[in-house]
Length: 87
Image 1 (tube, rainbow, N blue to C red):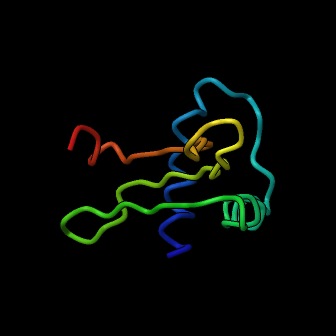
Image 2 (image 1 turned 60 degrees about the horizontal axis):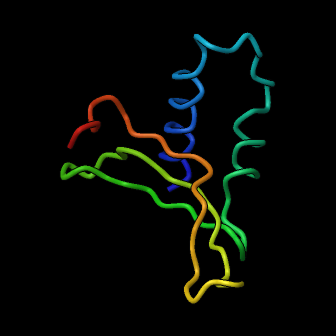
């Protein structure tokens, strides 16, 4: 599923370009891959539309219960394609 996540991650970068003057490094796909790939503490979810096309992704971290009775989660990144928003 990485090709779909890579395309969606480029979508989130493009979405933020109007507010950023920073340039992508030439090896940004490899860096993004390393950053987004789940670890024992993190998760990534890929959403697909009814047509099977990648529609969005979410990355985050699972939080242990700690002082609370239940565990929680922290969303780090979320992106939905223009076509899928509102559905």
